[in-house]
Image (cartoon, rainbow, N blue to C red):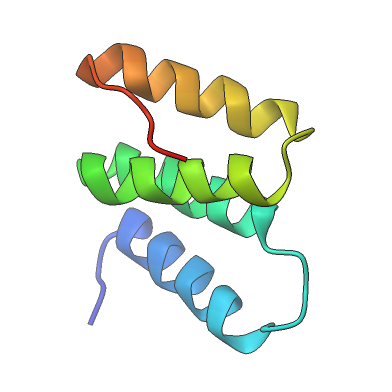
Length: 79
């Protein structure tokens, strides 16, 4: 199992997504995406940030994180 703090954070956010199926998930996706990016998992992190923006288009922090991540990888989003 996870040993580093980043791995623990990532695992906890993934558990939160699974345990609260009927709760709004945009912020969880945003936080998980940021944690994954920080851990070097770029594509998976971008996927979660895109989900956050799609689920809650008025979540400014998600747009900010996604924009910064896309600038860092030179990619484009698909949502």
